[in-house]
Image 1 (cartoon, rainbow, N blue to C red):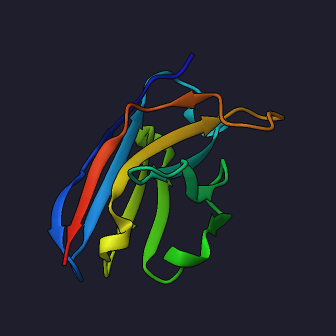
Image 2 (image 1 turned 90 degrees about the vertical axis):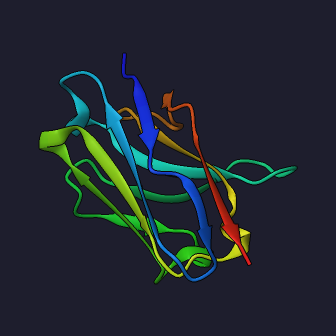
Length: 119
């Protein structure tokens, strides 16, 4: 069982930056692929970025490439999402999630943190 707690959301002007953090409980954090998702009002939750267990491999949705960076610190049981050059369309609740080895989907989810970008 893994518990995930996000932090770092808030209100920022367009063009600004935020860094989200997600800290996991337990001693097996490094065994999980981690992902950041977001859900805008009235829309489905979609993946934004993911990172491999080692941190060596990352993937991003096209809309955030070059602006967002996912990283992890396995010693701190934490995954980060650095968000730069934020746009109003980035406004959403952001969730982190963990996927166990061999799973097809994400098994554990955080409670979400609100990011609001004003124009």
